[in-house]
Image 1 (cartoon, rainbow, N blue to C red):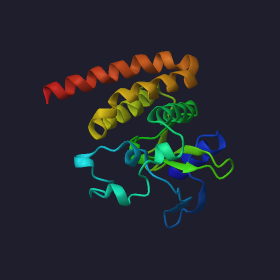
Image 2: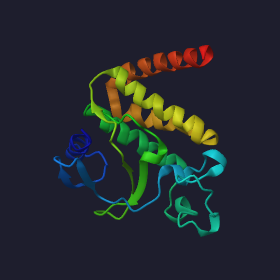
Image 3: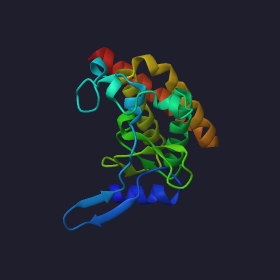
Image 4: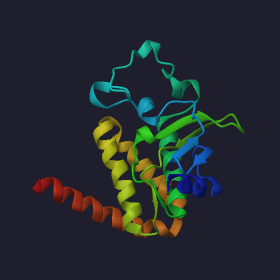
Length: 192
């Protein structure tokens, strides 16, 4: 399913890694290497600011120090890109299934040289046109923001604003369902 989701995204202009090789007999999928930092790395956060391998990075030795400034970017611009790419993905009924900032990377576009956001790791993805599935996908990302980037949580509203703009008329139904999913999530956390 991962290869199908990637192909569907590629055909529809969603920024994802290119497929390099598929071996269905052995269950192997080769995808393009994305040379750049994850959004998680750029935003910081996590347990004691650990990197994705669980180790605290040495700030001065990281190649991603001042990445935003060096590329004329802001956290806000990344959130806008994030909302746009997620809306494009949901418009073609692809549900990621594991939306976290670790599954979003920044790289220089091979065609333009500009920095772009790339969605990765579609291993849990599936196809669904259900508003519920799209809302849950967004809720998973919202919870990831709350736990991994507590200081950046207000930025998530920019993701939703950008998503709404890209989604057009379909946003109203997704927003209503997202509010329902949030309520269910709160009730579940209160009950235990």
